Image (cartoon, rainbow, N blue to C red; front, side, top):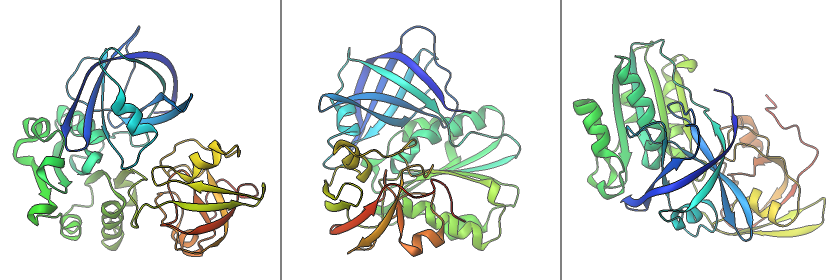
Length: 329
């Protein structure tokens, strides 16, 4: 689906912690119901330091009617923005919905589907699995979490999928063997995936290794799941000759915007490349948390997507202007 602009008021009717660090929020929609496809996310306008910030969260399909909207939000460590603001909402609070988009729409051309979810990545997969099962497709799900207490919507998915749901808890040593999973797939199978960067990259690598059709691998990642520690760092902006501090719970993009710099942006998930900036020097290896840059661009280490990628501490020098906002290869 194409991105849809919204100006819709939503009222919190339920909020509760459903797993360790994960809060469910259910909203009643004022006026006409909004149309939300399986796998879609909705953008909220959230109060933050006297202004509004816009954050997107995947919609949970838990069988509620079209006049209800459900999301689940993981509280990020040291968050001062989106997740913390969502967790502060109480029953009766009203909030504006400003957008509705889906970067991973469901297609129905195959007969067999595999769904892989990691951690909070289960949220969009609830809708994908339910929609495919309703159409009579063969659907199996692999749900990965660190521990049972950190897994959300397990009962919901067990009721829907029964024995076609496999749980993988790292605390029990039951991690997902991504290579074996992909090796066993038929070429006509479509795999949907949402999870942390490590899980996404492992399946992408196995998929390419086995020569499976690229168009049959559909995925969404959450860009805050890097491969290196999340620590504060500093950035020298060449245009302004100023140094900007980026906090542990802050993205480079937000730090730049809050310090008065102008940066193009859209998805805020490391998918569109619009917020890409030039890196002229860095005293630590860049933690690329996007799914936009090519392997060549990552290896060159001369740019990054400022909405998600960062340094694991240290200092870097960047230039905001003068870069093509798209793929270079």
